Image 1 (cartoon, helix red, strand yellow):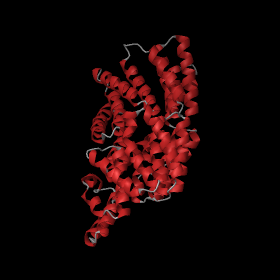
Image 2: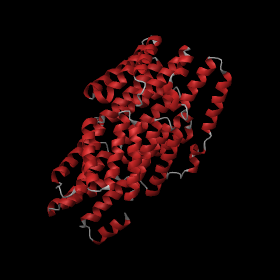
Image 3: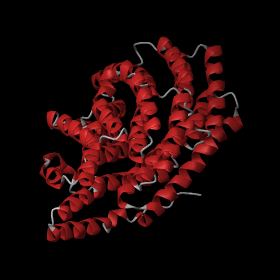
Image 4: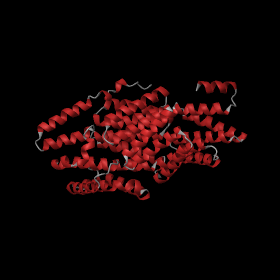
Length: 450
């Protein structure tokens, strides 16, 4: 950033150094300065007829708008850039396609988003653009995760990690590590996830990249919650709060409230969970982030059902169904779980348990977020109703029992319910050993700046 500032001190009209300053300012969290400089560069580009400069400036303006949560503005900047880019600029076209697909992803238009990402991937590979390839693979992995294909997402991310390192792009390397950590967590490998997220956080601190820091921090909050690492979670929450408020970034604030709400639900504080989730829902909704709204609503149904708040559960379910009707491939898989939770909150837990059991029996190979949520809900109901043998017999628990504390806790409760206290004691000892794993000692990680 100092280099770009020095150049502008010598000649304020130098457009490319000003664009570099805009990009550096955004990476450091100063979105207002970045937006101002990018707008000045776009004006210069239009005056001089410099297509390359204009495309780069529009791309940066779209990036700033995206990070602020203004998806309509981001789409407008990027669409203008796509209209102006010529076929002989494949690198710029790839970047623009990735950015435009990301906007559609955040809007919940997953089919359109995947189409744009696949087009960008083909172009990147055709032109040998390893950096572009890495960027696309990270984003496609997000879609794969959402569709329940965590294994496929992991394969894409590992390929993307190789491409990012080959391209020498540490920013992409960090974001890939963070997404790979989230993918490992989606498969129950929480300790592996922590190790990857810590690597991402080190890169974020080294680069002064607040966007990556926020991404890794929020993911760490989610992964650490089952281990009861409340002090670390609170430390990350304070840091993210400070960054999000300083940048007026509604998206990051929503992410933080969502993660905090889920952590509260895990502790059994469902009143706080619902408050946090409602706050997240409102922020996402106002920013037009439909996909995230649906996921938060699913969590709200679960929390309200567990709290016995039937009215809140039904209201959240109705709102969820509206979104699911518009994007059925993305959200219909959640409906059997939501229906069961509504039946439970209406007083028929036994019937809800039977419904969910039949559903999971029909989809034994499902691995997505809905299948995971359904499995853990089933386990809680089985323990509550004394169906301990049924819990122990379900093969779907296997990948979760290695490193996920909540899965192990349910198994311990089932073993004790059947009088298998020696087996339960052994599992309890293993659970306590997991909680002492050195990778969870985040005091070993660089401390974030205040």
